[in-house]
Amino acid sequence: MTYRAFFELQREPFCADIAHKEILVTPALKGVEDRIHYAIRLGSIALITGEIGSGKSTALRYVVGLLHPSEYRVINVTVSSGSILELYRQILNELGIDMTGISRAVMTKQIKQEILELVLGKKMKAVLVVKEYI
Ligand SMILES: Nc1ncnc2c1ncn2[C@@H]1O[C@H](COP(=O)(O)OP(=O)(O)OP(=O)(O)O)[C@@H](O)[C@H]1O
Ligand SMILES: [Mg+2]
Image 1 (cartoon, rainbow, N blue to C red):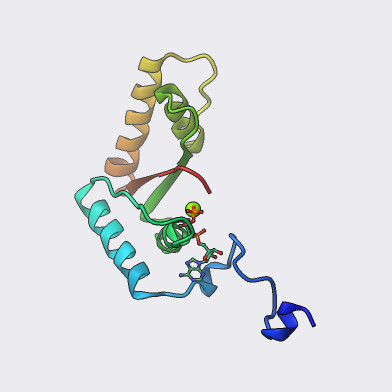
Image 2: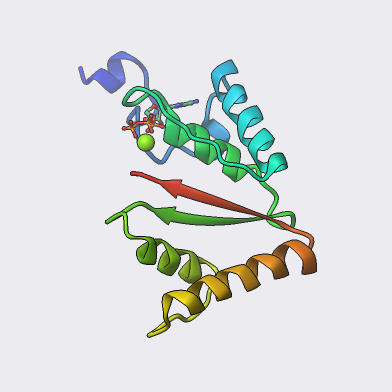
């Protein structure tokens, strides 16, 4: 008898891409949600840390998945080499701006312009999510 049959599991447990609606909303996860919303309200930074496999990525996915796209513009970037230029490139890419061969100064200007347009023009909130790993 396989372990799935033994435990009467419908599919493989502990996958990384568990559907949003199947995430268990624990008090800890609600705590993460409150803190992230607090950081968004303040326009500040929130850092999610925890033991390996404690649910950091899932908690973040849960919270970000509930941000309404008409109100929030989520910009997802992944930490790679640690270079600031790489970060700018990823942000511009996420914002849909073609950045072939542009300088650092132009990059920052374009990012600022786009964020201003989002915040003042479209009355949206920009949420930058920097992930270390998946
Ligand atoms: N609230 C939850 N409801 C259901 N499953 C969860 C929940 N939190 C975590 N899990 C499951 O536990 C496992 C580990 O979670 P997750 O990958 O989010 O942890 P992590 O802290 O990001 O791990 P790592 O340190 O490896 O990045 C995954 O299989 C995930 O689907
Ligand atoms: Mg993770």
